[in-house]
Amino acid sequence: MSKYKIETKCIQSGYEPGNGEPRVLPIYQSTTFKYSSSEQMGRLFDLEESGYFYTRLQNPTNDAVAAKICDLEGGAAGMLTSSGQAASFYAIMNIAQAGDHIVCASALYGGTYNLYAHTIRRMGIEATFVDPECTPEELNAAFRDNTKAVFGESVANPALVVLDFEKFAQAAHAHGVPFIVDNTFATPINCRPFEWGADIVTHSTTKYMDGHASCVGGAIVDSGNFDWEAHAEKFPGLTQPDETYHGIVYTQRFGKGAYITKATAQLMRDLGSIQSPQNAFLLNIGLETLHLRMPRHCENALKAAKYLKGHEKVAWVNHPSLEGDKYYDLAKKYMPGGTCGVLTFGLKGGRDAAVRMMDSLKMIAIVTHVADARSCVLHPASHTHRQMNDTELLEAGVQPDLIRFSVGIENIEDIIADLEQALLHV
Ligand SMILES: *Cc1c(COP(=O)(O)O)cnc(C)c1O
Image (cartoon, rainbow, N blue to C red; front, side, top):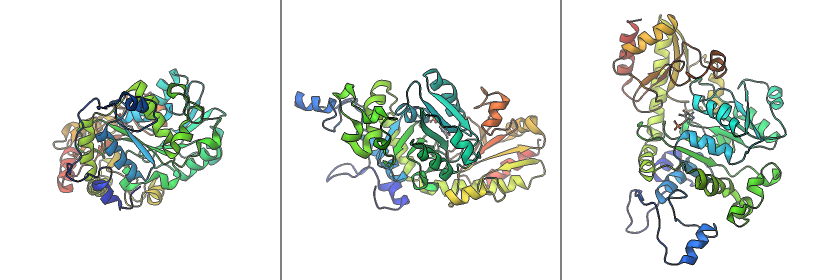
């Protein structure tokens, strides 16, 4: 971890050119890397030496960007993935297998819910979803002997529930398993989950990190803090010999890099969800301004939330930085500088009014995306979460009339003017 402040890390971390080398991180647009001896190449394949040989495993552009994200989170090792979904999948698959179980806070991104509730279940891994506001006793009751991880989102998309990090970290650690946090919405600018007990962080870099809606991508960062060997019987994949690498033991050989090395050497090798170096290059440019964009997103979202709250046609507004919000106190504790640029609201006219208002917006677009420079809206019940029934929707914290509003970094007066004219049509 560098000693720089977070703003400096956004610019400087991950890539340090040598004398006469390009000042800007180059795109290593090469699938493969050349060696002059067959012996050396062999040692790379055995993980006895570190070096590049095939971009599915590692690529210098991707590694530099992963190192920057790792530094922003204050972690020990990191990797990029092709998408946030791939990051959520790998984060669990790296430590759980058929017959295992995980505990998740139920307020989750729709894609993550599907992945954990259905897809990994077909692979034999079961998930228990707990109310994020459960008591510590209820949370403890969700654990089983075969539980391998606890998962939650720092600020849930789109429920905007702020995770009670300390409660979940305590339960995870009391049961000898790591606490994994999806920090997509808060970003490391607003929240550092490792400082509150998280062991592993995942990201959809598609959102604020890229920031311009240009590249789908993901990342996983390991704090290096979880002691796999203290719970060796639960995590044989990390603490027992890997026969596909001549019996190396990841925790013994790689220490704090064990989890990420295993995810790269096994999961990326076999499943291949890599980020393209071109996308990593663009992501890196996004990261350079993350510390400037996040405060503006948050400022605009709070102003838009206050405007909507005061409007006669608006029934309710949720934004964790809005005073009086259910999650205001948790937000103040875990992300005092701001939460995210996303808010949700409902209109007194319900679902039909929501659709009419959205169709009347001129600058603010209806898109599936969220968390980029341009303001946009979405109706989760008819879009991202449409595969869920009403019970599942409510469990995920999504009311049927909820409009998700991702407030961009345009001038706030233009954003509010567009809301105002659209509300005239309701
Ligand atoms: C979008 C999103 C994901 C999935 O990421 P993709 O890059 O779209 O695969 C996961 N978690 C959260 C919180 C998200 O917002």
